[in-house]
Length: 364
Ligand code: NCD
Ligand code: ZN
Image 1 (cartoon, rainbow, N blue to C red):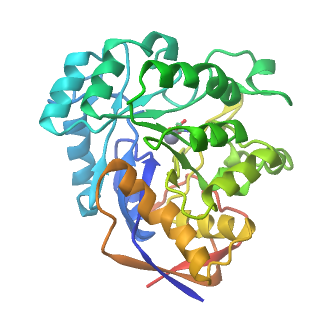
Image 2: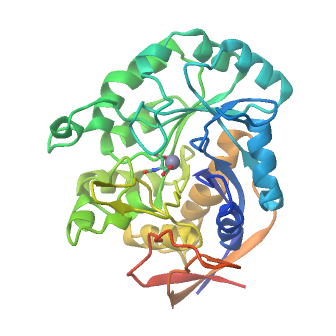
């Protein structure tokens, strides 16, 4: 079986900075990706809209130029959100919107994930002039929805976790204070978040990663497969079922692909593990496997429609750009997960598909 699909959009990914960027971008282009939203948690962060890169931060302008020089100019769309820090002002939002460079901003819970130390508490932003300016100018707010600064036992237990707390305690307040703010709930992992998004107005959507559709905490812990470790961490069976239900609901328009592909060349250290799963080269294959695990027959018209909505159509519609007119093909055939190659040899971020056989491959 072959699936002939429009090229797809990855509306949450990490391309980092430095010499490996061309390899990361190429891995995306090679898997039929027509465009990407490249996250701003670089080192230093993307904390300004315009101007040259400085020691304390890139601008959207300078980081986009860096990515384009590394091959991202082949994408139909490249969105770089502004990292919300204590230095972000309403004037930056207004000027960024007027210049056309600013399309989205990213909220990171302080110290909540990789390179998130420049973030600030959500409570400091709700009702403030930055969110008001974003609301007024239609700038999308991308949210890493986890309550920050919880102790280990409170971060996750059987009854609740940092994400469920964020979606029950913070998100209702955010929506009440900023009813017109366009919001993407990034990489949601729980039924609490999935239900929140489904019940919210149409201008609230969500990205879902391959790992959260495929795996649970049990997969990670059984064998301590740390290449499955990302934040928010994979959750429980009820949560995975709710995510699968969200993406397989006929006619759904709110949920779309955002791989959160996050290359870490050093994953495990003596005192902890870097958060982030790398899916460059294998994301559409893994998404197809997840849809099949969820009971979708991708050979049927209905099944293909569900898959295309999620992978190719809903994201562009949410962000307000056209779906791709280019095509790519997925072929049902056993395949090994591609390893990242550069002229200097393989680069080592361990891909999510490591150790399993993929049941789809990108066909020429
Ligand atoms: C991401 C990374 O490595 O940049 N890691 C992750 O676990 N998802 C950051 C993020 O999106 O949280
Ligand atoms: Zn991410």
